[in-house]
Image 1 (cartoon, rainbow over the protein chains, first blue to last red):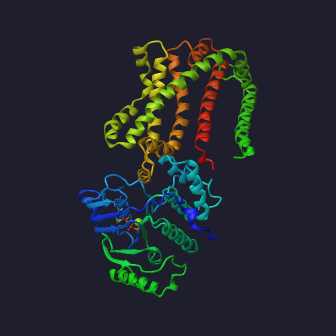
Image 2 (tube, chains in turn orange, cyan):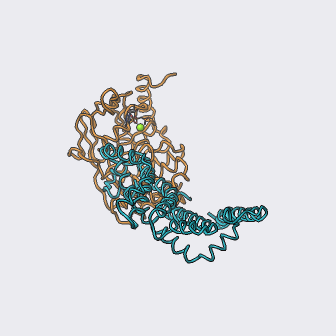
Image 3 (cartoon, rainbow over the protein chains, first blue to last red):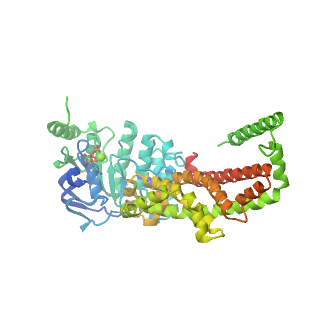
Amino acid sequence: MNQVSMTSALSTGQTSVAGASITAQAITKTYGEGPAAFHALGPIDLDIKPGEFVSLIGPSGCGKSTTLLLASGLEPLSSGTLEVDGKPLTRPLSEVGIVFQDHLLLDFRTALDNVMLQQEIRGLDKAVIRERADMLFDRLGLKGAQKKYPRQLSGGMRQRVSIARALVHDPSMLLMDEPFGALDAITRTQIRHDLEMLWLETRKTVLFITHSIEEAVGLSDRVLVMSTSPGRIIEEIKIDLPRPRPAHLGEYPEFSAYAEKIYSIFAKLGVYKF
Amino acid sequence: MTQISMLRRVAEPALWFVGLLVVWEILVRGFAVPTFILPAPSQFLTQMVVDYQRLAQHGWATTQMILIGFVAGAVPGLILAYLIARFRLAEQILYPVVVFIQGLPKITLAPLLLVWFGFSDFPKILLTALITFFPVLVDAVTGFRSIDKRQYYLSRSMGASWWQTFSKFELPTAAPYIFSGFRITVVVAVTVVIVVEWLNSQTGLGYLVLRAMDSSNTPLLFAILFVGSMIGVALSACVTLAERLLLPWKQA
Ligand SMILES: Nc1ncnc2c1ncn2[C@@H]1O[C@H](COP(=O)(O)OP(=O)(O)OP(=O)(O)O)[C@@H](O)[C@H]1O
Ligand SMILES: [Mg+2]
């Protein structure tokens, strides 16, 4: 992958909408009712400022995806209050790009048409969005995949298509659920950098869910560490590293200190059994 | 699909069919089977040429009834299927009724419909519609239910309207199921229309069957059978073709 400037690739450059803020107080989620009810999350508080890049990291099943669904208004809260840009969230956010944990591509649409769905449904200018889609395909290493159907793509490619779909309409907020999970280490490092450059330029608010300590530290202003299920936020770590951050984070001595800190929290939680 | 493999798919069954006719011809002639019991293919094929006009006229009348009845059954079937798959309340109210009516041996309604509606096309259309309705509905319910619920997260986060959700998410997901329902049902409809035409009609292949039996014209019976099955094959080929054109992702 060549190093083209992100300015042209990932943003239109015109709409420098400041990101939205997300404020949550004591939100919880219980799935189901009666004896089948399952307390999946919280209570947790969130205070994500406009343009901030926040990662959520925690053990599997602790409620990270649930947090994303609540923050996007796609699942109702069981209790607590949630505001986006100071207004209570009463219906699903739409000024948002979401990368779902399961890529959720439509198998009857080609890769390009899956991305262009944003344009069709939102009624955006076709030529503009198409140009952005092409640039994103290039940038994400999806050249030549435009006309392929999802089942003809590898797992990593599907995930990249779903990232393209989340970015193509230039939303003011990004919610990403383990977006790089199915990618190989090389592509992962590249896309991490690409995302950081995009974010530096447009300063959208990003809520980024990951299992990877390296990704969390490599990308975030703040890392929120969650406990085992039902997840709560047990630690908040401000990452004070200069940007853009290098491919090899080990260049920073502070990096290993941050990583160490998160490891030790997980170790205390009993996440690791050695 | 390449041209060659397309050709093979048509040519192979056609060759088998011709081979079958040849064996049939040889057997009938070899054992000197009387024509009124089993005519040789050459005899009913000749009959087809002789009776070309009547067969075409009545075949077309039957085809029209099939098409009208099919549409009259499939459209409400699809609409109800969507409601049942999508709304709990519709499911609770409608599904028991649907299951009950599905249990009825509907073809036995034919005489009753004649009593009610007399000599007209209406009983044919109604019965064909009734019989088309259920398999289409059942397959479409399965189709509409097959959508991954999380797709609604996606559609809602894009701010999709009801119509956008239906046309861009739900309908394409259900379409393969709907088409497979169509393909089977359209062939059943041929039989239904012919049976009702026995009871009540001045036109159609069913009516022609009665005429052939009156005059013990077994070759004509076989010719009618042949035309009837060609209608069935042609209609199901139309469904397959429509599916190919409308659902290109199934081929890729
Ligand atoms: N729709 C649902 N109905 C019932 N339970 C659910 C539902 N969705 C999630 N859960 C449960 O809630 C808990 C949290 O799920 P969630 O998907 O938020 O975890 P996660 O932190 O994203 O996990 P992972 O890292 O493995 O993706 C899990 O125990 C899960 O089984
Ligand atoms: Mg998850």
